[in-house]
Image (cartoon, rainbow over all chains, first blue to last red; front, side, top):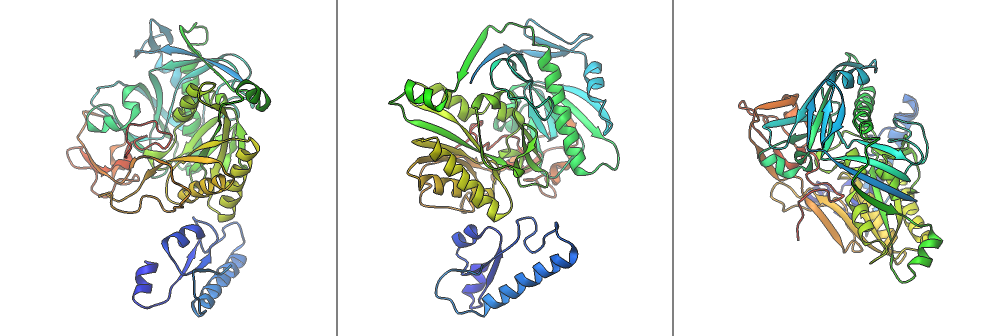
Length: 76
Length: 426
C-alpha cells in the first residue's frame, strides 16, 4: 500500500514496529512504532501517558512527511 | 548429558475397566482419567474419545497434541515446571508410548486452533492421522477468561499424557535408543576433526495466546539461552499456543523434534552436535534485536562451524528468523534456515515478510495458503462450526454437508517448520 500510494505521487510515512520489514518492502519514510499488537498504544501505561506516546508518534510522522529525503530514512 | 529413550509400541487403545498396557494395547479406564482431570475447578466437563487411523473422524478445534511419556530413571519428571516440580531433566531413561497421542479439544480458546482428519485427503497433511489418538474433549466453566482457559486445556492435556505415560513406568522397553551430548571440552577432544553444529530453535512467544513455556517460564520473558537436546525429550518445552495450526509446534513436536533426531543420527560421525540454543519471537523490535544478538553471541561462544535455525509461525517472526540468520552468518558461521511460505493461494506472492542475501540456504515446509477441500466425516469430535473462524478458514468454509474448503493453514502440523511433515519444494 505504501508503494502504490507513493507511485500515485503522494508521499507516505510508514509507522511500523518491525522496521526491517518496512525497509525490505521499500517504504521511504519510516517511523518506528511501539509493538506489533499495539503499534500506536502502550497498554502498560496509564491512559494519559499512552495518549502522549500516541501524540508524539503522530507528530513525528507529520514531521517526517514534510522532510525532504534522498534515500530510505528511519525517523528514530 | 545422556538419555535413553525406551520405545513401547502401542497398536491400539481400548476402553476397559482397568487402565494398563498389555501386549501393545493400551487399555484405558476413561472414568479414572476423567476423574484425574476433573479436579481442575475451571473444567465443566470432560469426555474421552478414541480416534484411530482410517476412521471417518474429524477433530476440531485441536489445541495441542502430546505424546505420553514417563521417567523411568534419572532426575525429575515429565514436563518440569509446568506439570511437575522444577528439576533439570534429560538424563537417565524415559519410556515413550509410540503410536499414540493425547489430543485436546473443546470450546475454542483463540481463533487459531486446527483440524486433524483421521482419513481422506486432510489426513495426508498431518502426521497425527497416523496415531491412535486419545482425544480429551475439555469444556470450561462459564465466564472463564481466555488465558485461564488456555492454561486449563494445556495442563489437562499434559496431565492426560502423564497419566497414560505412567502406565509404562515398569515396562522394560525392547527398543532403546541412546542420545548423548558432551561438554564443550569433551566434544572437542572426542571429535577434533568434525564440524561443530548447533541448533537454534525459535519459539513462538508473541503473547495474546501465542506462548511457549520452558521449565514453566514464559519464554517471552527470557533471554535467549542454551538447553541440552535431551531436555526437550523429557518435556522441558511445552506449547501454550493457539497460533496457526499448520506451523505451530505442538508439545508432541517438541518431544520429537526431527532436527534434533537427525543431528543426533550424524552426531560423532559427520558432525558434532553441540547443543540447542532456544530463542523467542517477541513483538517489540528491541526484543527481536536483543534476542537475535544473543543467539549469534551464544553460537559464537560455542565455537560452532554451522547452525540450523528453525522458525515457528509466520509474519513478523520472519524478521526474527532473518535477524538470527544474518547475525550468525556475520560471525562467519554457516546457516540453514527452515521455514514455510505464505505465498498466496496461487503461490506467486513473496513467501516471507523479510529477506536477506545471507539467507542463501533455505528449506521450506510448503505453502500454507494453498486451498484444500476436506470431505465430510461421519464423526466430528469437538465443534465443527469453528471451521469458519479458525486461521485459514473463512466465512462459508463449512458447507451444509459438513465438508470444508479452507487454506492448508487449518491442518495441524501441515507445514511444520521443524520438518515434521511431508511437504517441501525445490
